[in-house]
Image 1: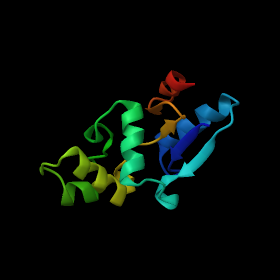
Image 2: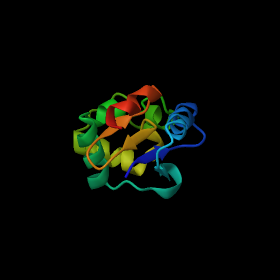
Image 3: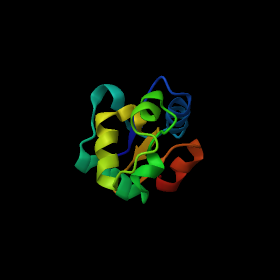
Length: 114
């Protein structure tokens, strides 16, 4: 099963969604800001599938991030907790299969798991 963690208000996320649609494959859309699908354990699992650290997938340009977290030191587990509590801090889109996951920016990255 393929899932795309999607934010319809994000240009990069919409591009990833369109890329999947053009591939004519079945997938599920998870609007992660609305549906809140991530727990600390599930986000840690997705990041492990991506082979990235939490710091690699956190949106440090978000206003709330800058106000509350910029310049502070956090462990990976603490960053994951921050991301779960503030899902808009997670880079998007993320495309996940049973065995792998990628950041869909640029959308051609998605080919790495199809």
